[in-house]
Image 1 (cartoon, rainbow, N blue to C red):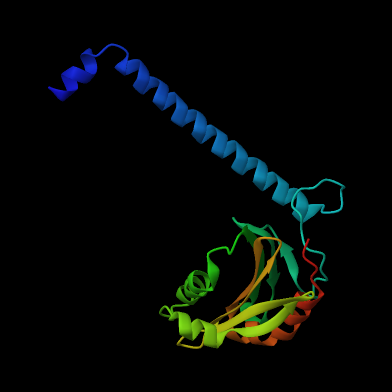
Image 2 (tube, rainbow, N blue to C red):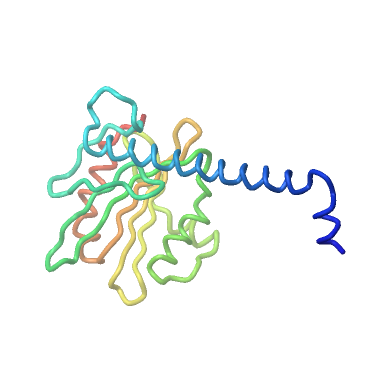
Length: 192
């Protein structure tokens, strides 16, 4: 009966067809925007000084040995840090409007990425270290997997209603040996 009433009501099939066309159009729009964003990222990664505003990147000094990579989804920049016998690390830089989810959500996501259980808000506050990104006071969170093999060294800072994230992750030995270069990178970075 329900199928019959839908099929027999005038214009209902046209409305559904229009809705499907609208969804296809929206999907195409999203795909087009995603493709354009990827093209802008690729252009900014390969030619950031071409005079076009592809992505507004911080002004920074990239440490020796860091190799610029294509930025993954949500990141504005990425670097590979080669290590001995393939034990390297990666650095990504991203930003989001507002708090970007806040410390609780982000720190627990990073913990999960290396197999750690979620931490309480009090544990996260207690684990926060102070570091500067340029002249901005920022929060730094350093964590290591329970087996000691993987680590994350992540920094959150706010500027002009947005939150910037700088994250180094990889083999613990590589993250630890590159921590001084990471901190120097942070302190030399001037956010737009």
